[in-house]
Length: 352
Image (cartoon, rainbow, N blue to C red; front, side):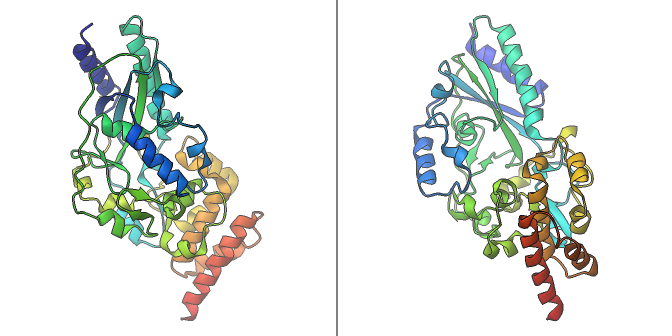
């Protein structure tokens, strides 16, 4: 079997399925494993206990899939055109939703494409026993694997960066028993730049290449299921689901391309909606308008919690005050606590 030729054919098939790049790595992640252990020991995974729940399967692909010889990493761009993220962030009465979450859930999109690619590999290469797809859905260290496969490097904000595509892309993997030629690992090109660190609204990037999830807006607004610490709420601003500030500031994203994937186009005008409009959704509306969306994972209570924080950080307009006042009897204690905080914030603004 001509493995170089097979690799080119797989890469071509991946492009036909909408991926912009493929790379191949062996499954050795010894260095990344030590960094993971140090991060977990420091408690920087916050409430994401699942990060430590699978022993070494996350950093040792062969323990997750014993026949793994190579890991194929794939990149798919997602940045929608014409969403003007900086403009929305500056309009404090608007709700900022991370650009990756404006359209259809990427897990569904990419998993389906990778499953088709895995089927193609099994049909084309007789004797292939393993071609298993992963999309942020199992204990897989996707960024270190992608770096090792030559798709880029982990920047100081810990996201994967590519010299030609910035960081506005999703990753997916195929574990396989095919001994394909490996690619040269990505090299770090952050240099002396610290833009991502200085722009972080809650100082979550505590040192170069070190992220503390306990302070990260993406964690606090998506994964965290309790009250958001009061000292961090002002820094959240109008970011109601995720945060893109470190990406928006990164110089390498000048080279990012907009995605042509229609699945990643904004739904229900979420790229530019007023906080009050979204806060007035009832649960049925939330469930209807987040069907098939990553936002659904936050759930209605956390969505309302986040919007209350956004309103508290916004202008003290009559409509904002009225919306919060009407929510003081919300059935969720979590929501009520954040509503009261927001009302105090806005009343302080009106009394100044």
